[in-house]
Image (cartoon, rainbow over all chains, first blue to last red; front, side, top):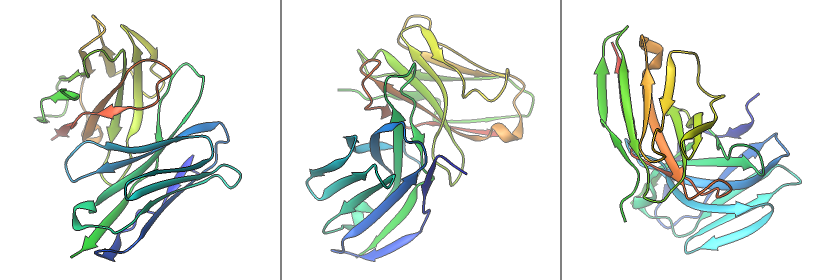
Length: 113
Length: 114
């Protein structure tokens, strides 16, 4: 079983829809949670990060962490065709010798105009 | 400012050859990471540098893989006796310092071993 599970999709939605992307994880030591966006043949771009539990909002994007359920989510409001990309969740333990990120497989999102 | 840069962007090599992949991190970032991303997968950790030293190389798949960062800035990932299974996108990321968890990625080097 992988430490981080993510539905690979693809997920297709109409423009303007609310998108929900999710990951589950098994390692209770994870404390930092990130969402990256990756366009085809590009490197991952950091969208949002959250420490421990709670919500964080940035424009059309909201990240949620529920540590009791080991479940994180990214919501995209008023989705646009330019949001079409692969969304990767990533997590890290705190205080170790390394800050390495453990990634999900990514969810491919297509926003149809 | 300039982001993380990686060269070459694409590398095609024959099985058994030696390759070097270069990463230039964001100026002032002391922490540097290498990851490998196979098709349809998320990036997988290879090695972490804090300054000039490799603080964690637990993700290197075998002893054909080696990385250096001699002056604490540019890093080179070296792969000996390449195999077809090494074909992937090799990504470099940097962060400001150890304990800062925001990692910024470069565009990657797409390695194809024929």
